[in-house]
Image (tube, rainbow, N blue to C red; front, side, top):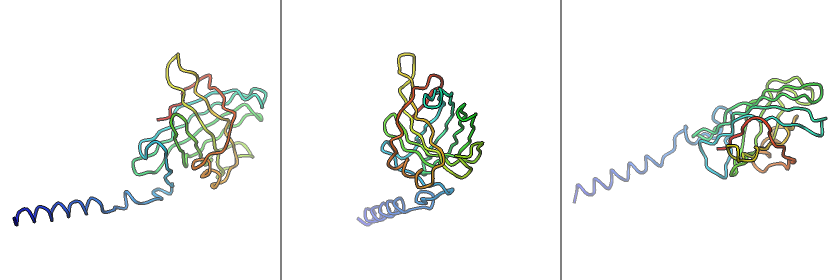
Length: 181
């Protein structure tokens, strides 16, 4: 009976230790990036790829971007976004992903600009956009993306990831592949 009691105590101790917290799993601001909630799963989320669209409201200006947004097992996000566009005489930005939310095959994203050549999107401001991954292969419809909206604040970036702006319309990407996983 004594061996059984010791086994129960040992098992209880192991369970309590496993339920304990470590800074690795509970730190909400690891590396200065706040983790975001997802409606799909908490880890291993990714939004990657590239898109090329025409912007009819800007004289069919060609816009290209690439994105790599990753949510790590500890809830932090990392990644980058680079966009070039023919609109307004040519623009180029590079930004660091600050948050994103995945719902099914779509994602809402926000990034903070760290390089830019446009006055309406200065360094330190934010960009927001949304994407839809329509699958792979010749029989799948093209992936879709909204235009990229410049000059936002940290609060607007958070809102995009938590709730989402209505950024319609979506444009079909005629080159590239967006993957929401």
